[in-house]
Image (cartoon, rainbow, N blue to C red; front, side, top):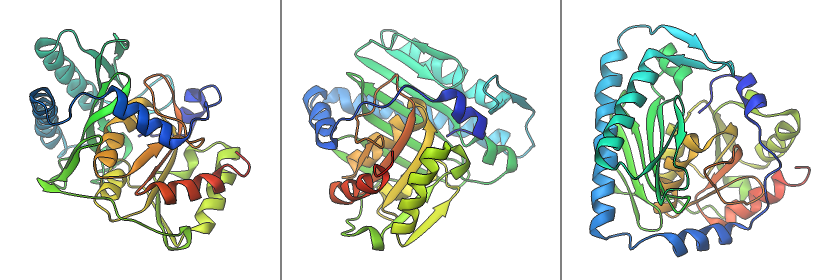
Amino acid sequence: MTDSPSHVQQKRSAPLRPVHATKQRDRVHRVLPVTRSALAVELTRFAERLAGESRSMLLRAAGTRPKIDIKPDASFVTETDRAIETRLRDLIEQTYPDHGILGEEYGSRDLDAEFVWVIDPIDGTAPFIAGIPVYGTLIGLAYGGAPWIGVIDHPATGDRWVGVSGDFSRHNGTVIRTQRCANLDTAFLTNSNPDFFSQHEYRAFARLRQAVRYTQYGGSCFAYGVLASGRTDLAVDGGLNPFDVFAPAAVIAGAGGIVTDWSGGELDLTKSGTIIAAGDESLHAQALLVLSAEY
């Protein structure tokens, strides 16, 4: 996720195109290959190999305070962010040279490829700098421009979520499902940082926060993992980019949930902005109604 409010303002995109959530699911089902094919198994294993490489590097780096640089968008970056992404890109290019890549630190290539790896070497760079163990690595694979395979890896806590959209998700090897929540007033909501919202977005978020039972802040991508595990019901964030959301979206969709923008629009490789994840479509629809009252 992002690490400074000013990052959000510079990363905001054009108004999001409204598309119903069901349309996103239909699109994913239309373009995805047979999920339990040999190719799916091979690529999921490779995604976990990438996560293992990143985990080793993060664990080695976690014991010391990193040198911090400020990127042009005012967000944090460390030598570890850059080193991990370089390593992951090298492995992808060596193994699947015809696949595209989109990464946080070194940009994109071949976004029109059939398969595109979407990677965030350290999701939660600010918590990593502070030594707060909610940072992790996100490894996503898009197929036909839609989230397909995802890994959320948290080395500090030993947690790893792996999912294939429309098929399965696992947490540390155990199959998981999102939980069903009938009404907003019983829902548990998470948000990484409300400072990342524009004023207009914050007003919409504040309405949703008032409608739910409880709101927990500061989980970065860990919050999306626990949603997939059925521990929470909603996750709402702003100022996110594809490398922030493609891996969590695949994990959540594999567990039975849904991830869209605040207009109910599908995710794609070029769009940044607001994100809402829910454990089931009914709760997602209720939350969208609250968010869209002024949005």
